[in-house]
Image 1 (cartoon, rainbow, N blue to C red):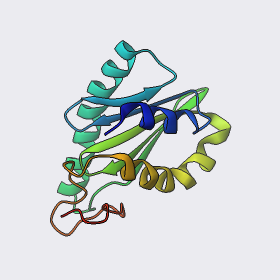
Image 2 (cartoon, rainbow, N blue to C red; image 1 turned 135 degrees about the horizontal axis):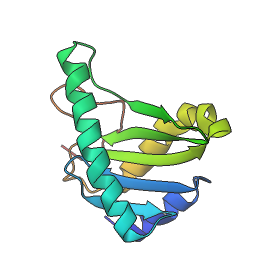
Image 3 (cartoon, helix red, strand yellow; image 1 turned 90 degrees about the vertical axis):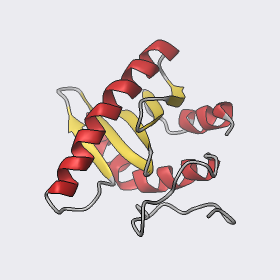
Length: 136
């Protein structure tokens, strides 16, 4: 995985802040924040998304593709890239529907840059993310 290449891809999203992190809180790449803030956000959202994911599974609703949290002047969109990686993006309030609509496409492009060692599915649940050619 080339963190610089992923960081460059995040910079093209035209959003104030973007962080790609793992389910266990590791920061893979970030844009628009410093490393310390990216690491804190990754750790916090790993716990938050873990609770959301297990809660929806317990309710029999299946897995989550994305979550939107609306704040007074902006929104945070969290999109699963693979089963173990999430993209956290801060967008202006008027950009929420636009980014939410294209978040799956953004996630698919980021998934192509991730190493094959990161799981793309759990059992038969693929989260509509393409595995790389030749990946198991």
